[in-house]
Image 1 (tube, rainbow, N blue to C red):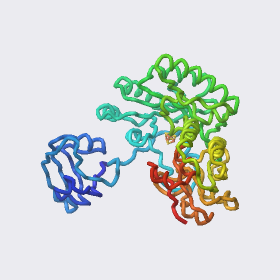
Image 2 (image 1 turned 90 degrees about the horizontal axis):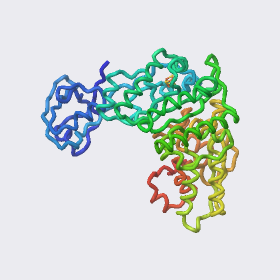
Image 3 (image 1 turned 135 degrees about the vertical axis):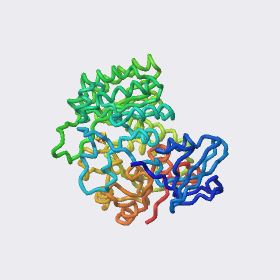
Image 4 (image 1 turned 45 degrees about the vertical axis):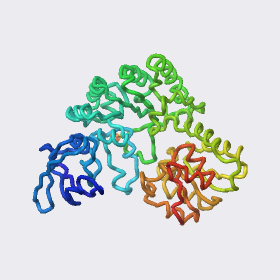
Length: 453
Ligand code: SF4
């Protein structure tokens, strides 16, 4: 069903305000063209002259001829930022994290999106299985890039098996179309032991080479396995030996690709280096950190940024005692950061608490999947100092709510300590630990305000 575009806000001093368009009015068309989503809207409103058809709540339709500058916004804000419903996926992947979540969580957490528009707007990865020819043509016409693609394998029949979708192999041809039209792409491979690793992975990497450098990067991340896999395909976690072999394989390709294209192109997520107990690659290997959201290079960046940020701190910092909670994956590296800080500022004491994920299972070690309940239960009897720092990833985007719906203020009350939300950069970490007011003023992120007890 076609979405209605109901105005929910009018920007002050805008064309919409001047025309007395009101909240609750519906945008019907621009220049007689219906609007499917935000991309149509942005494209059509770039014109200097346009005709706007608005329908009032009582059904009356009003048409305005507008003259404006090409880059002038109309000042209309709609209910849904995408101006359309999110498209859900048509797959049943053997590694899907959503299928491994316990029942009873918030409905929105179970929504399986696979929408190319969100790839552009939010960086989501899409499988291309529900992307129509019209969608492809729109990506090119509106110059939507980069498009982030969940590739998983370049073997069509294996892709059908892994995604449980008979069209998943055929869908790989859409990468050719995007490549031919020079649409920048990034790829992702969720690696599943016994499926798309080993020779299959070698085949995939070799097939992907032809898309480089229009495709800028491909990350390889290990499948996340929670304790809720009853009835799902049997998947094994990777071992240290697996990780060592993978690193050897990927690093040999990185060298080759860098020589040929000036890009390392294939990247392993930090988890593989940690599992192998190997030194993380240097910053230049990450080609400007194109896949940080997939945990590729996060640790290297954190260490380097921390070292750099310490140099900016004043010589004397006041004595402080505080605490940090994170997942087991990042804890050893945060420990390294704290050691760096401690050598320069011995009067700052930081208790580091790696939180075990009992909610999803102990194999899940990333900070972003820690629940408020695990945090509270594991810190309740611990010394926390004057404040507790948590990575902002532990909370729902833009909100103060953990995955299990507990809020930051619930945890603050339970632990009797103010909680500071810290972004993932080393600079934010150092400034939050320093706790100096002057740094709060100069900070551009501003996310370590205490949320109050
Ligand atoms: S495409 Fe994503 S959301 Fe859909 S089943 Fe696969 S992993 Fe799950």
